[in-house]
Length: 220
Image (cartoon, rainbow, N blue to C red; front, side, top):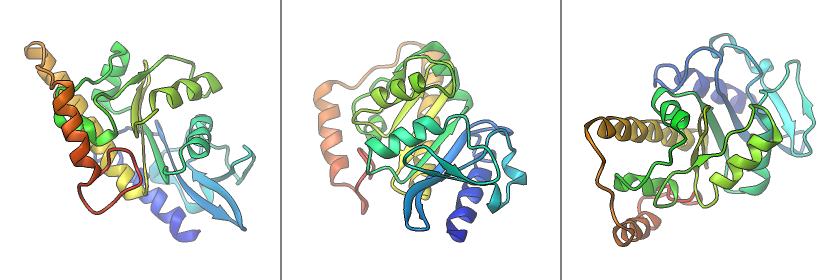
C-alpha cells in the first residue's frame, strides 16, 4: 500500500508537465486492497498535487464508504461505478486537458479521423451527456459513453480515461489529449476525412492482437 500511494502521487504530479491538467483540477485513482478489503485509492478534493503526501490519499471501499483524513474527490462516484462495472479497469484519470475540454464544450464525439481512435476500443470516442460535477447522473452518463471504450469526453467538463495499470492509464490519457489536439487542428483547416467502417473494423482487429498487454478495450 505505501508503494501504491507513492506511485499514485507521482502519476498525479506528471499531469501538469504533460499538459493534462493545471492546479488542483481533475482526479486520479488506482484499484487496491486495504486490510483485506477491495477498493481504490483516490486523490482528495481540492488539493494541489504538489503538496500531497501519502496520508492525504483516501481509501474508498466498493460500498461507497471511505477511510482517511481528507475528503475524497467530489468525482468519486464515477470512479466507484467504473471499478464496479468494468473489472478490467485498474486505474482512472479525469482531467481538464485543454484540447479535450475544448471539444467537450462543443459536445462532440471524436470520429474516425485517425486510426488511433481504435486504441480506445471502437470507431469513435464518445462525449457523455452533461450533468453537474460530482453527481450520480454524471457517473451514469460517463458509464454509458464508456461502453466498449476506455475513454470518453464529459460534456462541458473534460476527459475521462482508464487503464489496466497507472502507467497504461497515463499513456492512454496523453494519447487521448494528443488525438483531441490533432482533431481540433484539422477542423481549423476544414472537415477531416474520416476512415470508413470497413477500415476501422480492420484496425480494431489488428489492435486486438497488437503488443504485449491485454485487458483494456483497444489497448495495445
